Image (cartoon, rainbow, N blue to C red):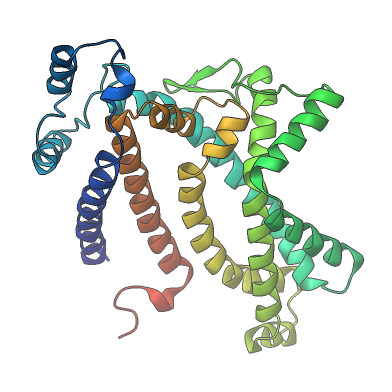
Length: 324
């Protein structure tokens, strides 16, 4: 197992290197931030000084090697717009995004698994059909439209919840979180529900199909023949096998939620990394864009490693060395 972990870590480093090259070339080949950051009335000498100060007068490959050298020491460049380390800006916004993504995935998993089990165990019941119809809606409705409807209904018409912002926060181990305050929790409800909808539908359908498949297997028949209660059959024998694909997909989707919470954060003015990315794209703040993508890919790699380890724990057949 240890050798497997080291091998995956080496693969992860290679992935990060290739990704950084592609992202750097793609981002730095588009547009010229000098056109946005410098006063249009500036003369050519001022423009040349600003270009040299930002290091944009060097060839692209030289800029990349400078970036890699600094990145190896944890320096992902300085923001063109704010003149502060880009990684500092991102880490400042990261707790808000992680809080939102974690809350959304918890809702998706904690509600999706029991609802999917119910739909799988009683597929012809009214409740089972309703659950599956709701999951189809969750897949079909666009995120931005759902967010606007949530604001319209619960904020404008009913006045129950705030429309935007994160609200007051409290420190948890030195990290600001909003779920520890009543007002912060009210601000968290709508963006979390909006972000969780697609993944809730996905977990429901995965759990339902896994349950239907597991109930036809011989080990379930043998468990019932031994006199085990239906609760034990479902809770131990069925659920353990259903969790294998659910854990895999939920882990990958957690990374996707972190990376692509941009729409939800923009609709609800949630001060996370996604909103910072949009603001940086608007002013072509290249260091922040590249640093954001590097951090997101690193999170993806770490989450995939954890998911692979959890997968091997749930299913001994895929453990390294077990096949022999």
